[in-house]
Image: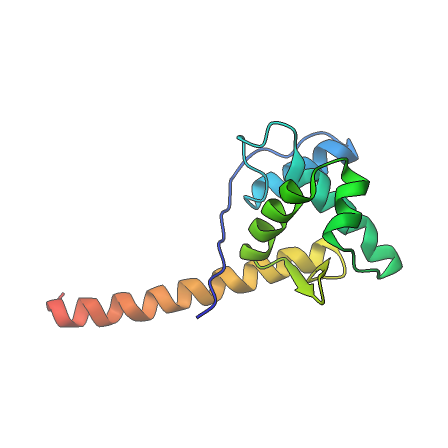
Length: 132
């Protein structure tokens, strides 16, 4: 069974500064944690986002070079992004699973909907067995 971790954080959107908006976007989806002091996940996300234009996949070494992070740090954060379901790996190369940010929202929304439908089904079954 494949698990996808989804975290949604409701927060007011920033003013029209693209960097702040991207940070807010990722934070709202639970991609970037407050514990990530040097914004490693954000930096990796931005590199992967930029690679969408050229439709290029990147190795962890390339991402490490572009973000000035160690390969170990990059792999740690890539695993978190893969856990969230928005990054995939093929032949030791990484890419976002979408072609743009709007598609990313649609992907997350679809995952949430599937999860909620499953929860609703299980809740109904439990309610029935408990006589509620």
